[in-house]
Image (cartoon, rainbow, N blue to C red; front, top):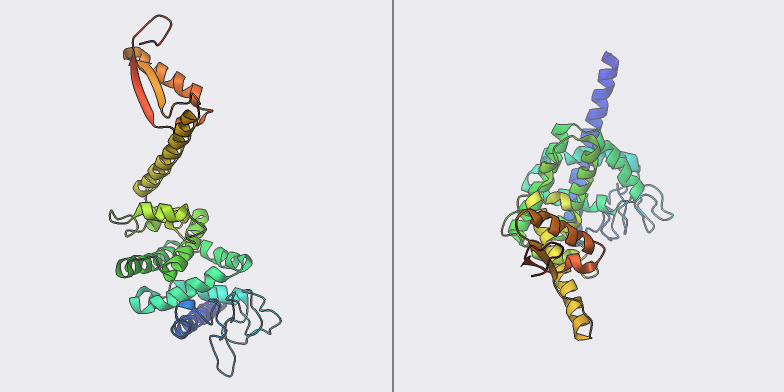
Length: 313
């Protein structure tokens, strides 16, 4: 038992050391590569580590593990593996998982490293992301909560200071999504931990984010694509916007049909009797319209007189 504990201790120390090296190199890559993330999956051509031992991670467009070739995140073209800190996808994923709970990333001074890490993970191929996801699923509540809080702090501070959605916010939100995906299976922390205070604040422009979501060709990112950051109240606002747009579109369509000689009304008109007939009349008429686009029209309710066999006025 003592030998097993000792071996586990050595593994932990090795991973912590690898994570420290990862954070240092990420910080250096971010400073050297600027906003494009050159040298670590941001499209740059310079390896992270240009020492005699060679770069630890990939150059080029995919953010992989090879020091030459085009780089697709794991296979770097025809290049040979760099003999640096993390020479395999599995080792890089382990170091990334440990780095995510590093205290270095919690301070604002470590945000550049977090941004570089998030951009790198975002550029990994699906197989490599799945390796990291398996590691995250094994986390307990303490580690998951710490990593989530680190990402949330970055997003909140950046939104408040930059007053815009930066590429770093996009990457860290995607990384937060990976944590959320892991938590969906593990249940390590409540989903409320993923609600972001800045995004759910009253002064946040949900309508603008919704517009970005509905224009994916023009905008590549919106928080609506990552609904886990929205609390129930904000999601209700999004659904309300969706319904308003659908109503307006249906209203325009009905008006156009009426102008062209059609008999379609631009409103969904419910004729209901008061008293004990109210619920039955409403349900019957909604049921008649459920297979039509009428349910998307603006609603009008008209009171009808009680007659034996009709709903006439």
